[in-house]
Length: 90
View 1 (tube, rainbow, N blue to C red):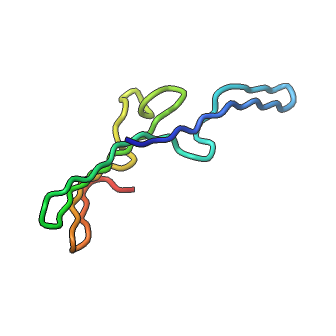
View 2 (view 1 turned 180 degrees about the vertical axis):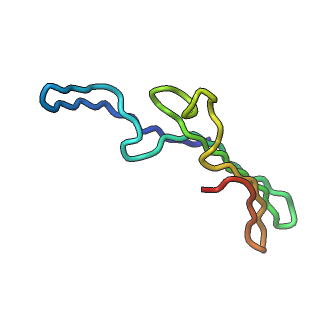
């Protein structure tokens, strides 16, 4: 399991306009994910990588649909030949 959150507090004043509150995605896109590798034998390994967006001020996912792993979602196999993955890989 891995992830990262980019959360900050912003206070902006421009003339009579003022804003203060939580800011997100300032320098990093917040994310949560799972990844792993399993030895299959004979020099082969199976792997997976599932990664989805997190909105730190609203919860998992970027919509009411919840966490959907739309950042990266792949399954693969690797060995002496290199690696092959299928799925969404941005």
